[in-house]
Length: 288
Image (cartoon, rainbow, N blue to C red; front, side, top):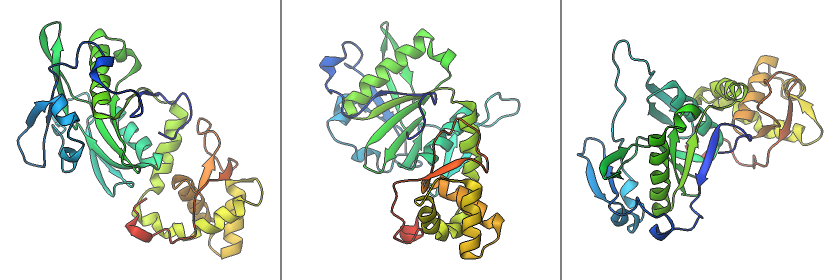
């Protein structure tokens, strides 16, 4: 994901790593995968190698293995998060998972997120063991990334480490990346949460100002306030609208923040990002 170093997310493996079960030792033989082919369908269970050899077509219409449960007094906080990058809701089972979804939505490269996509079944010390990763991401270049969301302390438990090791091996067989998301930098997470307020479709009307903002930013170094003032003067819009357009442009990666680990303020310096604003920002039904 396109975030700063030290974000609390570790890319364990990538699709470009060497594939083949001979590289992983024990754990791959006999591993099985459960998935739900479509909404309302029964779970299907197949051998890992059978699915890995057949491409990713079986994922096209997949539905989550399970849905979040809601009951009085529960400690976790499940819910639905509306992702602008998808134009729809994605379920999560904890506030920690919701934090990850906000970051995935801000990433700019994620086009689809499937929660609880598969369940892996394998042997551990001759006993059956299963693990359900939290999310499967599909990126703009069609690559897939399996994600587990787990706190740093919980990651040290032997059973969790075993699950992640075997999940990594399964991802190698599929040709997917595998990422473990842990506690993010709190300031960075707060900044992304605040910027996510500009993801709504209601804010798409602000995208018309993106080319002008990018043109201003390319001429010199400006703060958010200076860019808003310049936009308000040049296009005759209220300063409040210009400010909203600036932060919307940051959400859209038209403008770039050098260090998201520092609180966003009106004196934050913004730089032009490497984007093409020559086309209409509302083309192709874009929800972001």
